[in-house]
Image (cartoon, rainbow, N blue to C red):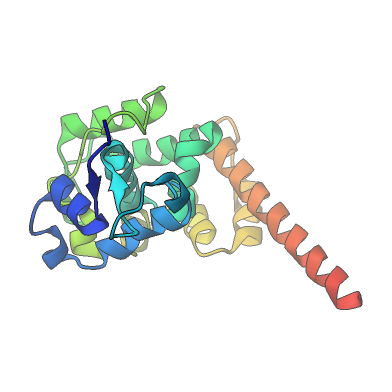
Length: 222
């Protein structure tokens, strides 16, 4: 039996309420980014009807979880990596755990403490992000307040009056200042929860940037 298909706007309304797009039209752009980067079924995998951006009903759980994760991690590539790379997922789970545990609100957005705990547990465990929906810790989807390109993590760090060392490093990481982040994190104890994982992610970013620089230098010499 052929599955039902949803346009991206209809899928968002089905998952998050009929008024969601009138409140935050840019959510559609964020959702479409998951089609473009291949997290949602690609066009070649769909039975295309009138709307080329239709997704099958089986992709609704993936879309729901991607939108929740993008409230914290604004980069669509990073959200995709959480689905596909176990190491990246654990790194992000550590960040979310540090943000959510024992909090009743973040950046003015109310949290359900029980759902926040369950959300973290699912990320830390072997919960299948494509087969079921994560517990929703948010009373209101953060993008409604922050905009779909905002990041709850970035807002929280920016609001901190006095940054702790890890907060400062995360700010450098989010701003693409990886060498400065690397210099700072080398001063921390890698046995502290989350430090080794973040250090590995920073080192990876620097290595990727160096490879791009080497390629550009090579091409300029041709």
